[in-house]
Amino acid sequence: MPDVRRTVYEHLGDAFCPDLELCVSELLANVIRHLGEGVPVTVRVVHGQGRTRVEVTDPAPRALPVLRVAAADDEGGRGLALLDAVTLRWGVDHGPGTKTVWCELPQGPPAAPRRQTRSSLVP
Image: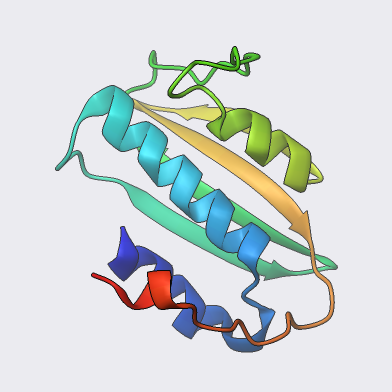
């Protein structure tokens, strides 16, 4: 997953922001959690017209994302709620033998450079 985030960062440059990083991470994490590691995916990022759209396509058209409210002691189940909170909108498109989960974020001013902390330097 870090390689994909790095590639998206290199593609977007200054337009890359923490909310976009969160969206890429959550969409990929859902594929890994529900379909398994090694499942082929396509990540597409389109930047323009005042929005940035992130799409993750996988080969499991019937494994649909569900927005739910996680209990305080649940270890998971918050990814789509986070996505829903930081995006303008999100949804699912179906293709032949695939599904694409997508989200759109507002295209704002470049994010301020992020400061590295001690914890981010630990492998």
